[in-house]
Image (cartoon, rainbow, N blue to C red):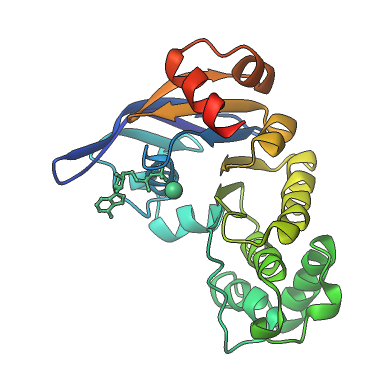
Length: 238
Ligand code: ADP
Ligand code: MG
């Protein structure tokens, strides 16, 4: 579904991605782990063109992302961030139906029906008509996930979606992400939740210093790490 070849990204003199190669197949749940500042967010942002790469290729559905219409790429690759960025002046349901109505020209009724189904899957059907300010952080993040899914993406990118949440909120959000994975959604996620990564990942990628240092199944990465850098990283996070 996504083929990344020799991806490079610099910020001024700083080389953040130094030639990353990665293939993401349909139904994969690829989890990126690595030290803070090693370029995980930059990598996700290059996939959906929130950043323009300085070198290499990102092929999405057989076509270079830079040759796709940028709006098409953003619609087909949903992204959920650490901070949920809901529209605070709109009810929960309006947050979710806005883009499908504007962009996909869905009718009120179609958009509302789909939104209600999504709210149900994230466990918030009863919150459809409330304003975001009355929600907890974990509930806001689940609405943000529903909003992203409303665009019927082919791939979901999650960048530390639970890092800003109080500990007791984390589980509900991870549960929603886990269900998406089980339903076969193609996903790339950055997380510090190693237990979760171990459970849901079809593949774990350890990045450090702008390259993929090691890649494997959760068992290979967490139980049988090879490189010294990965061993050091795991000794700090596990
Ligand atoms: P991670 O998500 O792994 O913590 P990031 O991809 O956010 O890492 O950042 C990688 C490096 O690039 C860091 O050193 C960060 O300071 C730098 N960086 C990220 N975004 C920018 C930017 N817009 N301008 C300049 N430097 C940036
Ligand atoms: Mg980051």
